[in-house]
Amino acid sequence: MWMTLLLIAGGLTILVIGAEALVRGASRLAAALGVSPLVIGLTIVAFGTSSPELAVSLQSALNGQPDLAIGNVVGSNILNVLLILGLSALITPLLVAQQLVRLDVPIMIGASILLWVLALNGAVSQWEGAALFAVMLAYLGFLLWQSQRERNAAVETEYAQEFTSPEPQNIGRNLFNGALVIIGLGLLIGGSRLFVQGASDLARTFGLSELVIGLTIVALGTSLPEVAASLMAAFKGERDIAVGNVVGSNIFNLLTVLALTALIAPGGVPVSAGALNLDIPFMVAVAIACLPIFLTGHTIARWEGAIFLGYYVAYTTYLLLNAANHPNATQYFNFMLFFVAPLTVVTLLVSLGRELNRRRVTMADSTAGK
Image (cartoon, rainbow, N blue to C red; front, side, top):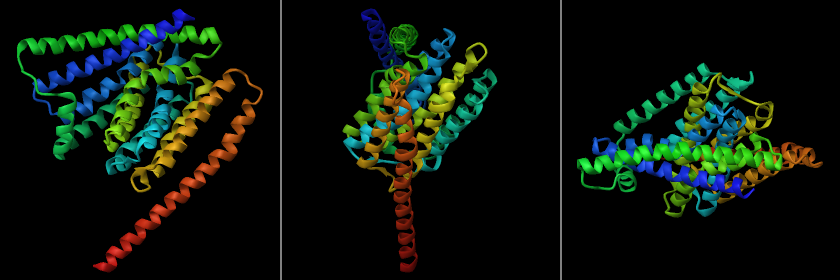
């Protein structure tokens, strides 16, 4: 047991250090080549914070453990919205940029539904992984084009301070940053192997399925960069970054992490019946729930954050009850599905209706004033 926990803790620590080294080295190299800090944030930093998910999912698929790979991606997306946004909103109400509502959240919902459809036959094939990654490239190309067309001085300054602090540009410094990239990649590979081995041993020790371990421990471990980034953004009052980080990470997980895993793994990635019947539909429902919540005043209020957090606790509780074959697991599931979920939907619809009515009144007053 101690060796298993040591593997998990050691692998996770190495993953986080590797991701940090990769982000720092690559962002400073890009800055030395004249790439704008905003573009660096949209590309290298987005990849770097999700690189633990990519490393662990690839390692799991290559080791013949597809449930860990699927559980890691699906569990990370559920955790990002329910746990990270829930905790962040409890710290301070979060601002939601209009672009997120108009573009990024619909893309997150569409990618989630697309994964569900592709997995209905029991696997995500290699060509389907290639198709998902092509969508990611198109989305990334649009973001880069938009970032150049709509330059935001405040965002540029913020990314420059965070990721590309001024430093002397010389051959020695560039070699050092290049070494950071290589070391970061090496640490990601080594850390992912230790982490996957530890998670597999833990599943066998407690009799838990690899899917449950992937949805809980592995998802939480690989999402630590997103957890840290969003919570620190909330504490520092950067309330829009906390939301954008989560939505962007979820899109990246689906269209890059899972896509490349399916593309590289021989035969693609099999998807278990358990993931198809519960976890992927729940991930889709969580993504869809973001839209009405984000639309209400373009904020996530504290009470909405509490709902997110409550659902994460309820979902994780069911996973553990079901894994332990608890006699009340079915009753618990039915209570959540037929009472709590409909009550939540009605509450969100009422809140959305009030917001739309407020906007209609405001627009009518504005028109009358003219």
